[in-house]
Image 1: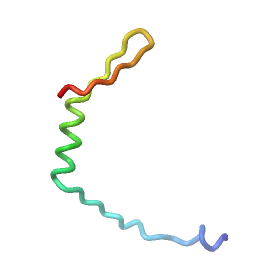
Image 2 (image 1 turned 90 degrees about the vertical axis):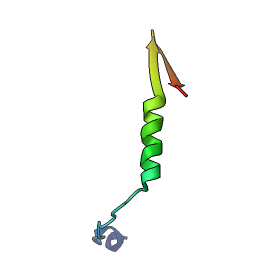
Image 3 (image 1 turned 135 degrees about the horizontal axis):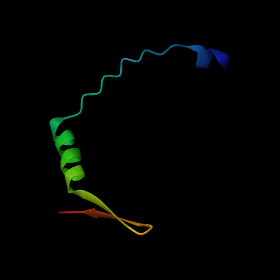
Length: 47
């Protein structure tokens, strides 16, 4: 067991997302609104 945890794994995980994925996440975050009233939290997608 200790051999598994002591091994060094290369951390060369270069993730390159597509432009479409980035645009989707950005447009979703622009349309997402969180409203707080008293102790209640309302999440709304303004679309």
